[in-house]
Image (cartoon, rainbow, N blue to C red; front, side, top):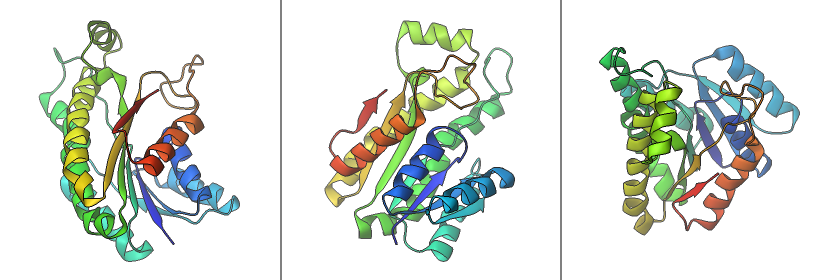
Length: 226
């Protein structure tokens, strides 16, 4: 059975992606820090006929990101798709925040992602697989966006997202000749059911999961914005 690793599993996009790929016949490896949430996901997916397994891990460090992918490969078999949905907050106001928190957040968006990707890469090459990345509009270079970032104290997330955008772009072009697809969905609104949803969210997680599936199937465009 083909396997997708969903890193940063929780309500919203990652859950919808896991369910979409699960319904398409993939086994889903759920990676996150909260064991209860992971187990709830496994039970829910199992009830829907989806093969799912939980892998508790902290991917804020390079070693943790690499090791969890190695564990999935050992316990669930070859990796066909790696979905990166992990992120961290905590340094939203860069006039006050500990710079170490900023480094941590950028690290999750870049170095940890690369470590996980490298560990999965032999399988992705062998299976013509894919790296699918959730990204956010706060990273866009636009004056109105910058003002919103300041308003919502999301400076760290914005910088991490900008770095992640460049990473996706260069990996897309690097891996395309080898048949490994790298792409992202750029989310520019609030997603229903997430921590950001204060009752006025407009984006359905299932719609975003569908965009990821389309990117994966068509393997053409590097990015789609929702």
